[in-house]
Image (cartoon, rainbow, N blue to C red; front, side, top):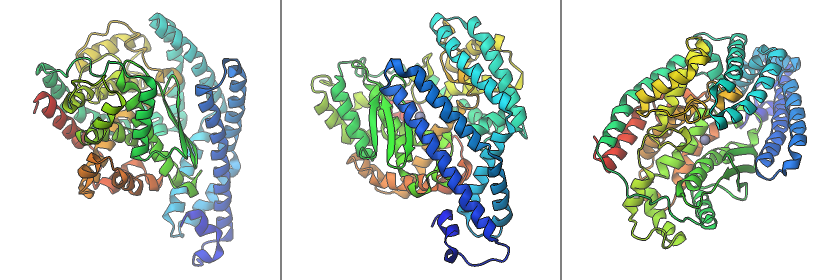
Length: 523
Ligand code: ZN
């Protein structure tokens, strides 16, 4: 029973003297407004999806007007003082109501409301303007490999983000306030400790794999993979893991994403490369993992925190789990390699299932994060966490960013960065002020490994089912332990409830170690 139903029917809960009708009314009104807010945001999400898929070029300026109006309406609603009154009324009465779902909704709505009202309108507008200008500047600076042109924009954004952190408030360091937007409850110190453990284990493992001199058969993934066949194969895999195409779509875009528009409507996108298998296939597995989370959130709680995703780290755990833990496993390819051969006859002639599996599991240090393998990827993220934390703390000047990037890149990943275009200018995130976003990618990997280990312990037939291409058991476990809870619990608590212990790097390191032992003979 949801909190809304429990509170809206007078017979559904026992009378408690300290409960006044006004609390019931306040909670019902709060949820009504929250749902309207979510519906408004879903309208912007449809327009955003359309903008990146089918919008004719001529409609771009008008689309900007439409999205700006929706953003302004959403901001007004999110900071409406009436929301503060309703929250206060709920907080006064809910203490005596035995309904942890309602309590979680009020807790999370209070958190969002406080954050929204603490930001001065002037700061919100300045950030919107600065990041809009910075996006153009970053695009040109990356193209021209010209950090100096981007530098003043980034300096402006760092200053504004520090102001934002001061306005929101923090207990430890300013970066905490920024991280909290993406991973509520996480702290810089806690995340940095996890990353330190992870890096300490990964760096020597990766070095040993490289030193082994073993390499997968060359060019297996860079052959002719006709796009129509890729689309068919990727869609059939997405459907097999449970993405419901009657409640979702897959379209083509330049920058793949997944957007949960609302109940019964989830849009994922990918891009195809006719001479490279991984891009579309693992992209679709990744976005379908996000999509499964969106499709299995409790639809009757749409708009409530308890019906929304938990955190970006948990969202990313769902994509990484299906993309890597499942999609790059030997069990998965036992079921899918014969189908792959059927889809691309000729292309895979002379390639054994083991050759193919080694090719999609290859560990190879590279310059660009989005092209990195699943082990070194986390070192790219560790580098960004270190640098953006130092920028926000004031320990690193923007002018010194390229040098710091290159030094730390060499230390962590062992490559010399030849240009800023392939170095500190490669990602879009800092241009939109997304400080605190990067760590959620690696948190997703760690959560994915820990969840997968817990699922394997709970599902004795998991390996057998995966080899048959049957994912109902794993999907059901994820829905029961992750999806169904929405944001009822914070990520740390959700993880402990689902896996029995707080998040650490151990399961992910064990996962990488096992793979490297198999393919590179590294222990
Ligand atoms: Zn993702």
